[in-house]
Image 1 (cartoon, rainbow, N blue to C red):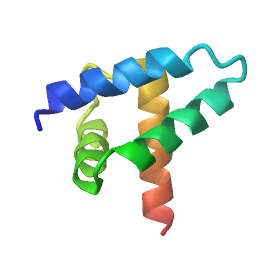
Image 2 (cartoon, rainbow, N blue to C red):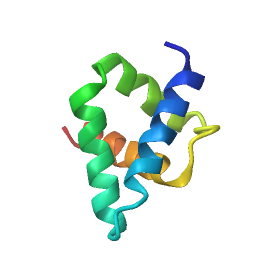
Image 3 (cartoon, helix red, strand yellow):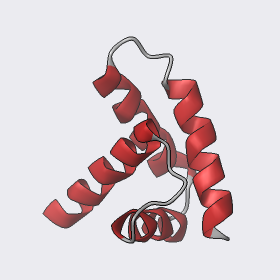
Length: 75
């Protein structure tokens, strides 16, 4: 899947979770959604994209992907 498509999907999910009144809950919700519904390959592509600068990722998706990356590194 193209990184542009993954970025757009992440931004769409981020738009939904942006409505959470507590920012950390929005990030957790987005991480949970991506972990449940995206394949490991899709998640890895998005994390790699973030490490390469994350062009096109909006703020909430960027924070969620960073959280996933940190969790993956801790394991």
